[in-house]
Structures are given as C-alpha cells and as structure tokens.
Image (tube, rainbow over all chains, first blue to last red; front, side):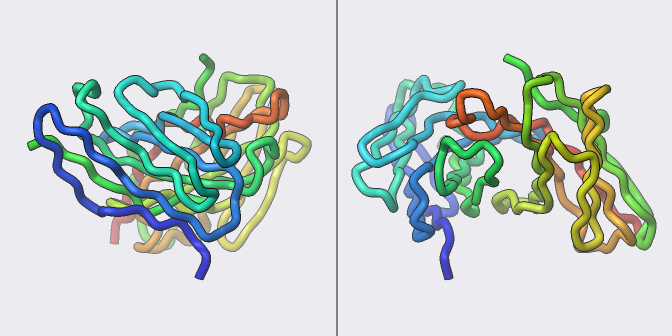
Length: 115
Length: 115
C-alpha cells in the first residue's frame, strides 16, 4: 500500500538534545511538508520541500532543521534551540507543490515530549 | 497573514442527526478549500474538497457548501454515526503563486456524537 510513514510514534527529548523525526513516503510525491500541532490548535507549517535537495522555511521554522536528500525521505530535526518542542508533528506530501487544487496526504504523526 | 477559522470549537449532536460544521475564511483570494477529519492521535484524513468556481459538492454522506460572498464554508454530515466523532479542520489554498507552501488550516471543530 502506498502512504506516508512517520516514526517513531512517541519520542522523548532531554534538555539540550537534538532529536530527529522520520518521514518516508512511497507515493512518488515531489512535495513534502512538516506541520506542528499543539492541543486544540490547527496545523502550523514548519518547513516544506518542493523537490529533492531543496526546502523552504514555513511559518515557525526557528529551532528546526530539515534535509531532502532523497525524494522519499524528509526528516525533521528538533534542535535544542527549540524551547517548547512538546507537540504532535505531522508530515504530509502531495504530487506537485505548484498544483494548488490538490490535497495533502498525511502520516500518522509523532508525539514529541520533553523529559 | 490571513487565516482560516471556525465558529465553534465543539459541536455535540445526537446519533442519527445531521451535523453542520462551519468555517469562516478571510482570504478572498483563496481558490481551493478542503475538509479533513482527525481522530485522536492520528493524522488528518481527507474528507472532501471544493474549488472556488463551485458552490456545492457532495460525497458519501457529506456535503460541502461554499459561499464566497460571505467567505463561509460548511461541512454537512448526514445521519451522524459514532465513527464520525473527531476533530474537523477546514483548510484553504490560493492559486496565485501556486500555493507551494501547502494549505492554511483553521483551528478545528470537535464533533461529539451523543448516543
């Protein structure tokens, strides 16, 4: 089955530690996205990538970093500079970022908590 | 920037009744709208979408209505079932610039089904 796989489901971060969230898709999509979701809130865009080896900052990129070395993979690193990292992180993709009338496909999310 | 919002954070309906979830958007340039359903601890699932050149679109048990004059979007769920309990998000995208940075999401409405 085609889809987006996020791992791990739950992740705990210690003070000063960087952690990396995995996102893999086998949908052959060019565009991939990372969103952050806080309780009772909508989704806020962290980073997005339109194509391999390219990515742009979203609305709340500070304290996060990404890479896009392969089409299938778009890992997100939450750095120690992110002072409030506890949230539910969602990865999404779509065929082509420039097609506005196309839905996003989402992964099942990673819940990050601070120890 | 402009954002998509919702009128009510929580909606409680009786099983078997019809549900109507509302969404107000402020960006008059938005061309594409979409509804997602999110169950607790999971990623959002696509329900239905509509382009700005349409007023109504129907799916299985769901109908989306778009009123561009007052910038209002609604999702109607017929014969609500227990499995419909979830948070429902509306989202928008613009045609200008291709909307490469994905969708803009509202805060969501929590739909609760009473037995």
